[in-house]
Image (tube, rainbow, N blue to C red; front, top):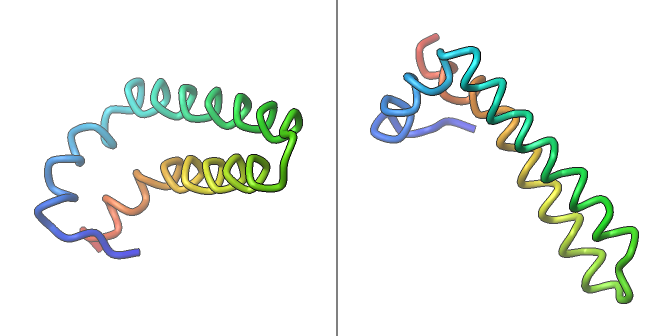
Length: 73
């Protein structure tokens, strides 16, 4: 996915700071684990699918660094 320059540019400071991006990724992975538990405990297909959708979007955030830096290539 191509990010518009006006979105990518301000995010460069975040994604080039390794300790910060590692901390953000740890948080995202924690939220993914929580959503896995929500999906496992879901009492309906709707709740399970919502959990799956949340996991899918959280995993996209794990690629934020690549998306931001792709515009520089």
